[in-house]
Image (cartoon, rainbow, N blue to C red; front, top):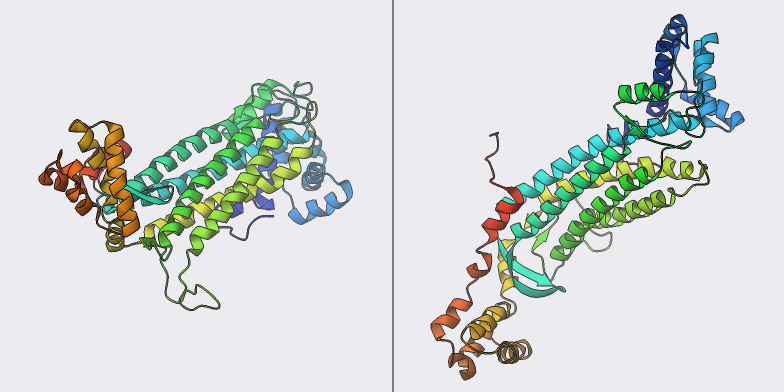
Length: 438
């Protein structure tokens, strides 16, 4: 079920070899704790630590018979250790090992994802400052509204991704809990001291209370944070796709030498990366829903969540790793066309300044209702007859009787709309320091 993308680090993390290595670490730590309490001979602990090993293929072979992965694992480990293996898994239930190990793996996956997020944030920030003053039209409902800058658009993405990082960091904290509390969470055959020892050694916290399992709201928070981040990446991707539309073409994905856009049409330059990310975000959302449905289990625990997590844990973290890195590459190599942005800004022949005319009339004493009607009449005429809005305004005596021609000219100044861009950047990024300085 793991995607083909297995960039070294994240892909290796979810290998069977690493999974069983983590299980073995939990088992040995439990033995160390038991030995410290005098419940396992020190000599036996030494033998366990020296000889403990496993074979992925042998575990699979045993599991064919036992139909139980943890039993297959402990059976194989015992084949390496010998008689002292009787102390392995003593007082533990399978979920003590599985859930504690899953917490370790998700936390480690989270470290990679947080580094990926930092890379994307840096890429967005660099391009935002590069285009802080690159003027383009802002759109609402897909229709031209008022001027913005491309840097401002990127600042919005940056601020959102920063929230995603904070959200995911909190989710990583929520998932970093282990349990060694036995079959129904009562510590009947273990003790809280063993749990505390194992968790501390693994960099986890003991779950304050558990049943046979750690409660799955923790996992749901983690996978939901991934899904929200994926949705933000999708948001960026969809915007890039819109900006690359032939009729717009204000920005486009880098088209490398030798790249092909269509098997039929040699001229095509498609936003394939952004389309890919748009689709993958759907998988993250579906996996988050599956994680939420894992919260409700029968009594102390059933096994319905297990099959789900075997899929969504590697799939979602590997996908997130891939998506963050791919979007980082798209942002860094994005081709931006300021001239086309300026051209598109003028498509409506000045209609984007209609609010300034409206406000000026109100400030001059007209009622808002009357001013709106007058401005809208001229705006609709400009729409239908494809005429210059400013010239229509300058010829309307209802307006020129209130506003001077000089004042009207001032109302069509693009810079008026952009005067607070530096202040917004300061709120989002703070005072930016040159590269290389701390």
